[in-house]
Image 1 (cartoon, rainbow, N blue to C red):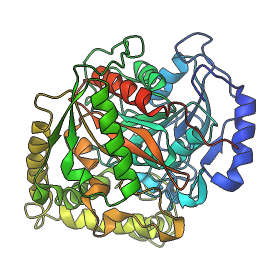
Image 2: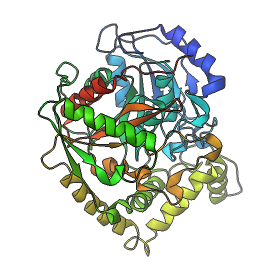
Image 3: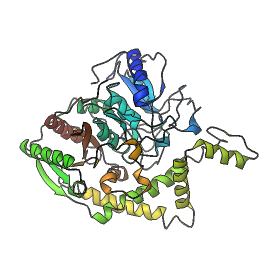
Amino acid sequence: MKINEQRSASETIARMKASQPVLNAVVSFYDDPKPESETGKLAGVNVVLKDNINTKDHVTTASSRILENYVPVYDATIVKKLKDAGAVIVAKASMDELGMGGTNKNALTGAVHNPYDPSRISGGSSGGSAVVVAADLVPLSIGTDTGDSIRKPAAYNGVVGVKPTYGRISRYGIIPYASSLDHVGYFTTNVKDAALALEVLAGRDDHDMTSSNEPVGAYSEALNGDLSGKTIAIFKTVNDEVQDETIRSAFAALEEKLKAAGATLVEREMPREYMELIAPVYRTIANAEATANHSNLDGIRFGRRVDGDSVEDVMTRSRTEGFSSYVRARFVIGSYSLFEENQDRLFRKAQKIRRLLVDAYAKMFDGVDGVLSIAAPTIAPHIEESADLRFGASSFAEEHMQLGNFSGYPSMTLPLGKEDGMPFGVLLACKPFEEQTMFDLAQGIEELTGLANQVKEG
């Protein structure tokens, strides 16, 4: 479904409710929603929000038991922007609890299922948001991306997933995960709609001091998919790590099409020893920041309360019952990194290594318009076989998208093909605030693959 192909809100909600027994992608629905504006770039467009986005007078749980009764008293900035543009918010989508995970299995409401094969994961943490677009329920959904939480679900579900430059979209009103890594992004079925969505969502917000003053472009109007004269770097270090021959062959075929379209391809690499540090650095920084961000979820100041014999007992009981064991384990890791005696050895060391990784990553963009790689090394795993790789050993082919969060560089996933009926994707990254270049290159790639508006119906 494209943005200009609209259904009524009531029909959309009915279709989503009918899909719930199979997909389980939605946490809550709106009752008879109406547009607040009859004009705007998204007039009448039905939109689903990830359930960590604050919405006034509507429950916002972040798929966590500790927030199951949380009703915000204000709208996030992006919610206001969507409403001002004429969009209709119809539902809140499931996610990994508090954004912590890559499978969408640990949500309070249970696992989200892939529309192409319900026995497989959606990916996470923005899995519900990816699925409602992939299943042809809405043309636009909003997610967040701290490590790859939009871009990998986009690959697994065969849709377009965009993580713009850090600061490009305000995070005011978003329940955080890791503040130095969090980005707001979104899903569509085609590049033109993705370009239009950023026109609505982007811009400076004085409520978020990390938001940028960079002007917002007319991305969709300026869209130009001509690849002649473009120079694209192939991220060889990532692609060489991918073992799936179907995915490798599809990427090689895309390379030939790019060259035939007039693009110049060059190979770029990062040292393997750097690539192997991505996961532990991410794990250290993200868990430490999450521990600090969610210290207020204690049953006293905020969140679901479980009675106890003392303040300390209330806090212990509330956090024990309010968080899943997986999230509690992340908080233990984060707290350990923040102990005064460990900060230099763990947290600050991870920050220093992050800077080395970002500097090496930046060099890959010298003299090129964008960097292209395989998005995920496999199709979506089966639910019973999948685990959150960030808790154990994993290939950097699984974790390389975190470079975009370390650096803040914009990147997006596009559909590339299918294996056994399951989608897989390609990742495109560009320099900071060069979203127009990113969309132009993506438009050219989309025209070569012929995979615009790919959805799994019914």
